[in-house]
Length: 375
Ligand SMILES: Nc1ncnc2c1ncn2[C@@H]1O[C@H](COP(=O)(O)OS(=O)(=O)O)[C@@H](OP(=O)(O)O)[C@H]1O
Ligand SMILES: [Mg+2]
Ligand SMILES: [Mg+2]
Ligand SMILES: [Mg+2]
Image 1 (cartoon, protein in one colour):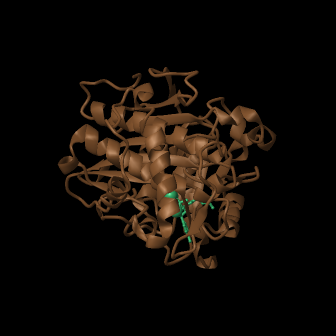
Image 2 (cartoon, rainbow, N blue to C red):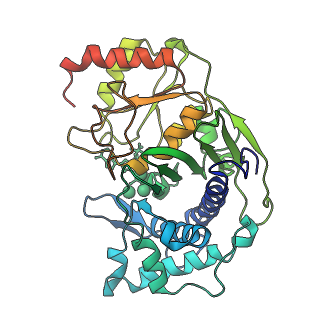
């Protein structure tokens, strides 16, 4: 696989990571297009009122199972967003059946992705077990996989952008990142044109990946579930934008006002001299857009008291950094992935930029404006 040297320190992790994320993208695309039964459109509300679907559970189960198979169950620690509680209720039998069917249908295609599936289909308890053993809390020591099975579940449900995000943390550092973006076309610049976003073109998504210290991030096309594009797949190097003039720069931010303070970011944008309208995109596609040069700045300022989770950032951060970008908190400090499930100590928000010049300007504007804000 291009960009992956099997002698590389994380060669096998990257190789397996990209393949399982490709499989997960295929699973999600089938569900989003509604071609898998039964009732994939079921959307369940979690305790915090955020949505979860068959796709989130199925991807988590499938990736957890594959990682265990590939590296040995006893060696695999996974920190992931979902748990199996709702699926275990007596009242959830049809939901669990949907997840089990989806997982098995996907695992049956393993060979197409160069992976080995189970000899016989997984049963309900194996699927529940695969989901619930992703209950690691990470931390500063050892290797931990970090998984957001569907990031931007709202985008997924609305037929819009979402990603499958997988990272590997070793001794508190993100060392591998993989972002599967099923609705983010491999063709450049499409994200800036909303008319194109609506078209069929964006159905051919992409997978981005990197390993820390490689100095390169890569992008490859999705392997099509219909067999029209099979493994192995070619990849190309992606690079951040070279624009460092704020007048020319595009910034992106979350779609939902509840997830980021739009008026605060608008104030920062004004101070720095950004002229373009913000690009509001669901999910870690925002990191993907920075990494491949479709946008220059990503800002997220969650409400005071909200704690950012590592799975919402790990893969995106390392891919942006290796593609030449800079990611810090709003105080200019690196994000700390060593403290467990949350980005502890995060100063106010997250700022990802294509280069140091824009980054310094944004951090300076945050510093100058803070007194007048009420995040
Ligand atoms: N209140 C609040 N504040 C800030 N962030 C929150 C909040 N609630 C949820 N989340 C997390 O936001 C993830 C989606 O982030 P996005 O940047 O994609 O936001 S948006 O959907 O575009 O509005 C989303 O990830 P997924 O749950 O994987 O979709 C959440 O982890
Ligand atoms: Mg969620
Ligand atoms: Mg998420
Ligand atoms: Mg999620």
